[in-house]
Image (cartoon, rainbow, N blue to C red):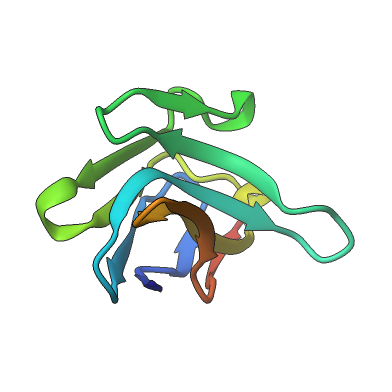
Length: 118
């Protein structure tokens, strides 16, 4: 399974960005999909997660500003980020749990930089 993320960039505080991440590869079933972010010197933190039936979880720091969604037909997850703050600056990674036959694996995308200027 390969995850290809896109949509990062530079935006002013208060602005919006939309990240996308498409999964492709062998025959698999995507279970959960998520976005994490990483700031150098810190651990990689969960931003938002969505199950295959649409249940969502958000980190407290992004609740009310970010929205995670997915298109199961396209194996794609999105992260709509509104009211961005400088502290949202990070490399954002998409993630998925995928089931291949009887085995379950975790996969990471390559990361996309989000920079929010003040």
